[in-house]
Image 1 (spheres, helix red, strand yellow):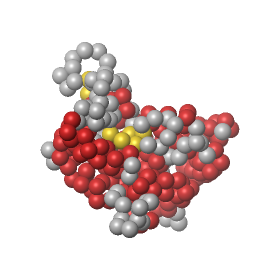
Image 2 (image 1 turned 90 degrees about the horizontal axis):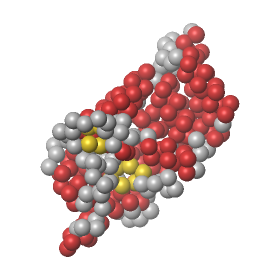
Image 3 (image 1 turned 30 degrees about the vertical axis):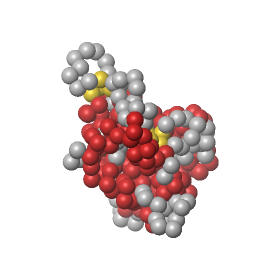
Length: 265
């Protein structure tokens, strides 16, 4: 019973902070992940593997991270973590640059998103690499199908397509087309690539990049997650209600952390 009371207290605090602080929902999402043993374990795994900037696979010097291992850990996070919590981290709404920078850094972009070199590769190279990968290609096809604007709908996805689009977008993280937020002043996303060296294939390259940067369906699906925020964490608790079982196990330290967070916000 004590465990249930601790977990219930923590979740109430997280829900309260999420609804009252606006620009700090990414903090609340991180706390909710910490409160769940499975989410926290998977998150700790990718953080450990993604520290530092990406280095070549045969790198033997100090520092840096092997990007393939980092991306593999990220794929495990989204495949095995509770979707309500992983998506809360990925799509948390921000109203300040500090929050948006935290959101941009959530999935260790120096390793998972950027590359060993200083300049981004061509988007056509990134796309071609994905299409040659048995892991990446079906995920890209799923994203293109799930996040394509419906016929006759210029502005956004049909409401029922939003969850499928978000799931397909999350599925690209940890692949050759790992997208991320581009800055801390907007919610624009894209893979780490450019079209400056595309030559006579510039239009083709820009069309691919616009699947992320100018896709009203993707934008609508991501924005539609924000009003769902309180229900996302509430839905996470549903399987434990009226069953006699405790909520996901949390430590007393997590409760104290949430109490301190609530006092500061």
